[in-house]
Image (cartoon, rainbow, N blue to C red; front, top):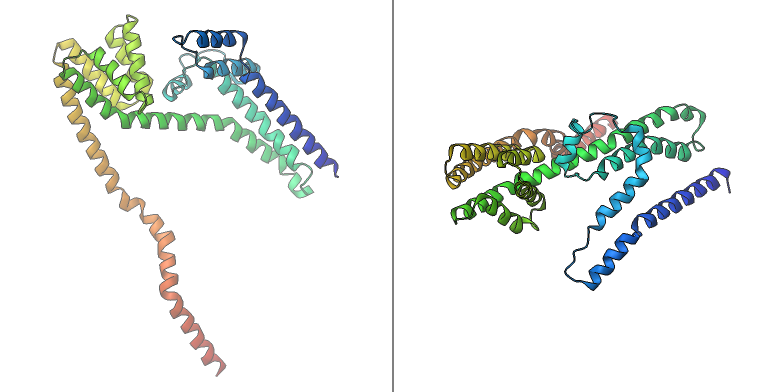
Length: 313
């Protein structure tokens, strides 16, 4: 057996064994968690803490040394990256350490894995290009968490954008039925918790801030800044103006709901108008060549056959 194969199998075993040990350490409950579980079994009314939070804490302890390498020293709380974390729904304090540790691990791990896998299987001409490939792998590992974070932000904002009209209609119905705005938002949280968890989570945070004594204007502005969705910002501005001038909240919600439906109808018409332009390039480069082959192929074959017969004569 070649030496490179032995080293590769050894490295694979070490990596798998290390990952298994880390998983066992993360999944193993602590003494406090075992005691809480015992209390939960003895007293059914006691709620268990989220196990995901415990895993995040264990992951933060393991990832903190790696996170110090790429973690910004100052200004993290007011940075744009922190705002993107909030828009993505990653509000746990452990997310920062896990994110930067993963970025450091990818920057150093991807080039190392590439070097282990390719160093003994390349000829001298390709061996000279290996450092450039390792540098490209390091750059890809550095920007890969940013791409995942951007995708998470877009996906969550899209979910809030799609669920916002339904929540606004529910709030309007509850307000017209006689409930206050705070009670209406709480009712919407209960109704949308399973169907639209992102929107329900934002409304729940709004109610918790209001219960904690935060002014309504500040709590609503926090809602707009947490979501980063333009429609929510417009609703917050409308509710703040209605609260200042003493106008009816139900009438304001009805007007805003009609305006929101008109805006979405115009957005749908805009996207439908762009279909003709977007389908032009696939039509030219993918569909037309196949049509030419199907329609002109038999005629071209007959012309070539006739020309060959004439040339042979």
